[in-house]
Length: 128
Image (cartoon, rainbow, N blue to C red; front, side, top):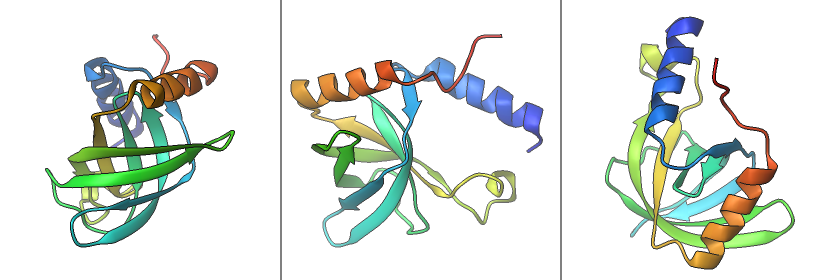
């Protein structure tokens, strides 16, 4: 995917998002019913998180996550894998492999913490 096509895809995805997101690079521990995983976040919103990982996780998998935002605020949350970026896919080879996770049952406190964090960061996309 060339740079203009990637920018269009990102802008289209951003238009579908319900919550603004912010760049965030932290270690994320997550697990499903049988497996413990580890990865690094690339971005976060009150609706979910992208986790860069080479470990295959299937669409629809429910996972539990533990992440610590800058300032030592640890959040424990569950979510569902809504999309997977596979490095073996030639259209996705320039981007980090990983999973997009939609948060579920986010406590009011955790949601407020994430929203405050995102509000303090510069936006990932700008209107042209």
